[in-house]
Length: 327
Image 1 (cartoon, helix red, strand yellow):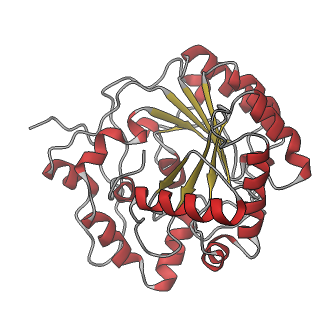
Image 2: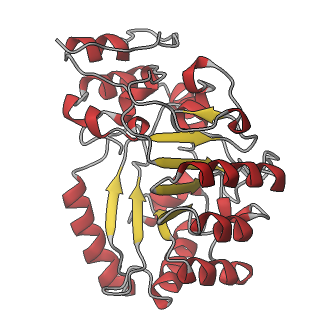
């Protein structure tokens, strides 16, 4: 049986509690430790122009947590010391961080692949046309949230009118070459269920997205990724209010797929928050589970976490191992 390097789960009080994530790993002789850390994920803050029901961070227009220019410099210094293959920029809506353009210029010099995660509506603004142009110039990969092809469902999750604004943003990105064959400008879509459900088959979802978006608006893209919603933050609060928490947690646990464990993003990623503190992933960031169970600032870390080091876990990790997983 493989040796496990596991940290104690954070207890989550709810009735009919499923088996803890750590015990499930043991049951399947699954090893969850770090491999080579090749990705730096940067959460530039919780400010967002939306307040989505499924947000694990509870980001929104009233949040004031935003990465400062000094922390941007510290993050860039860390990235420069460590030669990451991928730098993944997220939020909140990272487009709203006033440092985002300078950040992209700096970071695109330090890694061959830079990802910008977008809710799309933050790009559907003439004020962001220069950001789109910069992304195009630097061949930044755009990963865009587009939860549903059903307008009513999408708006119920993300806010009234969001669906149409998202479509307009996709059309704009296509006009700049994003998602177009042969352009080299990658546009990937992320779809999350709009209720207490697990994602449908990714291949079926991608086929449906291509057919509907292409037929109705002429929109093209590279890939669709369907992920389960993580029971943290605003989404967990909604599950509690709607009486769906216990059933959803059990559904996630019952859908545990040991084959998803080797590809989990936490095995190859280190995540940094808007203040410069380090985590295994953005979900642990939302949960407050620091890297190595110690509050370590990026200025205190010379290199990446070592291969074989432990990954902080809790029961929200079931969302990343349900079905095809979250990579």
